[in-house]
Length: 213
Image (cartoon, rainbow, N blue to C red; front, top):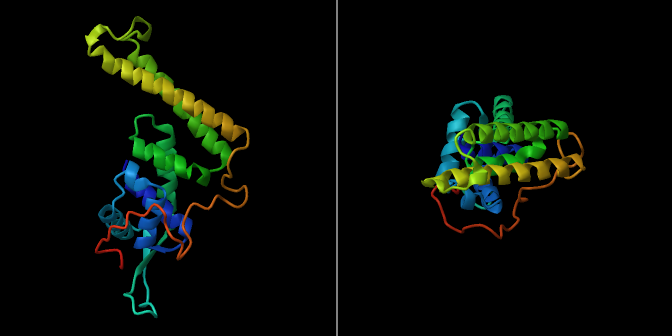
């Protein structure tokens, strides 16, 4: 799964309707350019590609009164919303996703109902347990990594990472079940996007040819 696809769909969905630079600005505000491949070129390419695929609807806007060029604004379609939610669900349950995909899914988990998010995360814990059981058929963590020579450190790292992720996910489930955060259908959501004209303290400041389009 591509994190950029999930991130761009989610950013457009939160705005309702947004031009490319707004999407780029939001992703930099979230720090996605640091923990994913959400670079300007990738963002603008994803917007155009998903518009061709029917996941986004492109709207040409008139030039600004200040003399700026016309921009293309995007809004998510019904098919785009279905794809976005599918990606969130898949990323929340799949243990073998890359860190950027996992991070994006966590950022959008509140777009699901609370009960569904909990169920998906519990499924994730179960999948981690199944993976760990398969690995430990051939490797006994209690015996230490030396049993397999230095290659055992690889297995040790994998198992340690799985255990840490399982513990973190259990903690997240407990917080959600305890009432943390606002999920779909529960009222006003957390505002995670910048308002028009709001300065982004985390912007890179690097210009891209597509910023004005």
